[in-house]
Image (cartoon, rainbow, N blue to C red; front, top):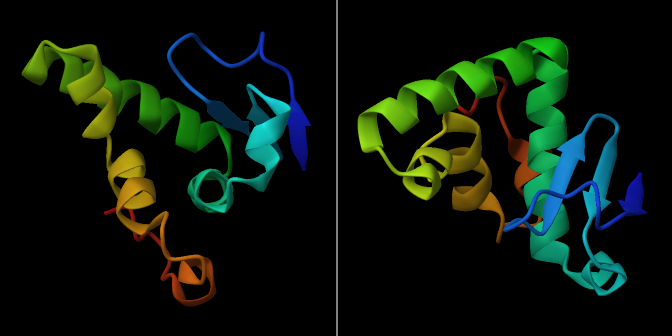
Length: 104
């Protein structure tokens, strides 16, 4: 389900996925199929880890990456969930053939 609520999306980001919602910063983003696909990949990841597991893993991995890279943006880009989503966001059929645990 798509929602537009700019105050829920952190500064510097365009969207956030909080199962079962994709929250967009701006209404015009509803037509951005690549962005929507990226966020749908996160929905699938969240389901695989029973939602709470996803958020715990995401947070812990982010902390480890921030220690390693000492840079917020590089840490974010190197989280396994983000690597999978960015790598496959242009393939609008990706979720049809995606294997379980593909973020590994």
